[in-house]
Length: 89
Image (cartoon, rainbow, N blue to C red; front, side):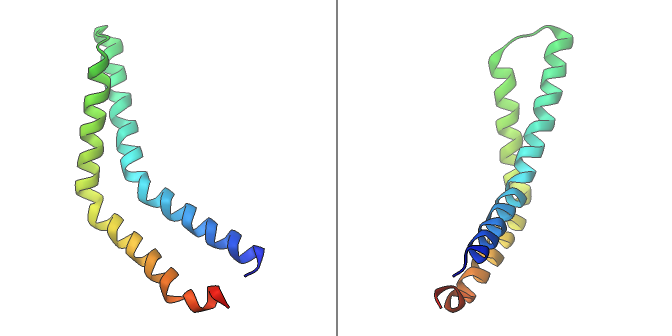
C-alpha cells in the first residue's frame, strides 16, 4: 500500500463520516438557532430549553434519515471489504 492510497482511503472515510453526520448536525444547528432567537426575544434563559429541542431534533433526524445513513455506511463497508485483496497486496 502506498501513502497516496492510504490518504485516499482516509479521505473517503472522512467524506463518508461527514455525509452521514450532516443531517443530524444540520437539523441540530437549525433548531438551536430557532431556540436561541426565541430565548433572545422572550428573555427566557432556561438551560434545558436550549438542549431538549436539539436532542429531540437529532433523534427525529436519525429516524427520518436512518435508512439513507445505513445505505451509505453499507455501501462504504462493502466497498472496503470487496476490495480487501487489493489492499493487502
